[in-house]
Amino acid sequence: MRVSVIGGSTVTDEQYRQAREVGRHLAERGHEVVCGGLTGVMEAVCRGASEAGGHTIGILPGERTAAANDYVETAIATGMGNARNVLVVMNGAAVIAVDGGTGTLSELGHALDMGRPVAGLGTHRLDGATGGDAIEHVETPVEAVDYVESAVQ
Image 1 (cartoon, rainbow, N blue to C red):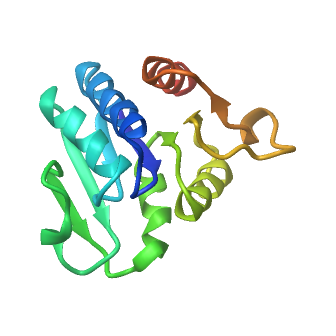
Image 2 (image 1 turned 180 degrees about the vertical axis):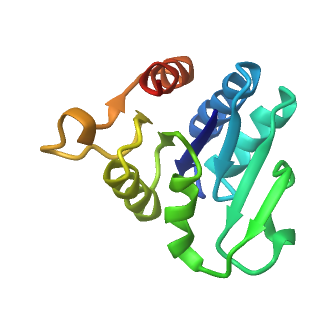
């Protein structure tokens, strides 16, 4: 399955480590990674997936595929800026969020609107969201991957 991984473009060493581990676990379990293709969480998840032999897809905000991080295998230029966030979410059967700012928050909103299962590692909490509109907050990258696998039938 394709899993969209979203998160901040500027991250701490711990957040980078977590995202890289998410990518590794996804690839080891045969999943493809979809992300925004740039730095931070996006680079880390692609790095982890690439190191484990997985396929990575970066949906870029600009018009140049060369802007993708070094670990993106398939770069897709959109020229859409942050409007491409919808495409990042749409192209995964589920979403894993690691940290993140306002761009991640918009992607979380799109994911919940589209009914995508969402696992969150240290990301936004949305008060009042329940059931299918909720983020499953987890503690580890393995729990994040376990959740999205169990939530997609």
